[in-house]
Image 1 (tube, one colour):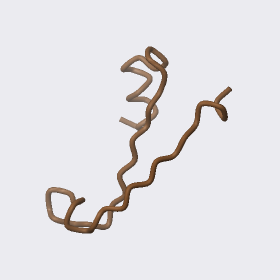
Image 2 (cartoon, rainbow, N blue to C red):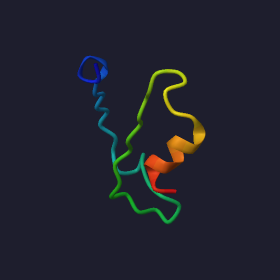
Image 3 (cartoon, one colour):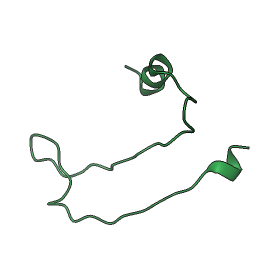
Length: 50
């Protein structure tokens, strides 16, 4: 089931478009999408290690 619902989108950004508050640009932005209601807030935070 998960393989059939998995997709990847790659968007190239120049280093001046992505940075942290200190200006460091050696980051990768990852957005994870799930089906509506798949994860409640407690489960979302547990997956992030928060």
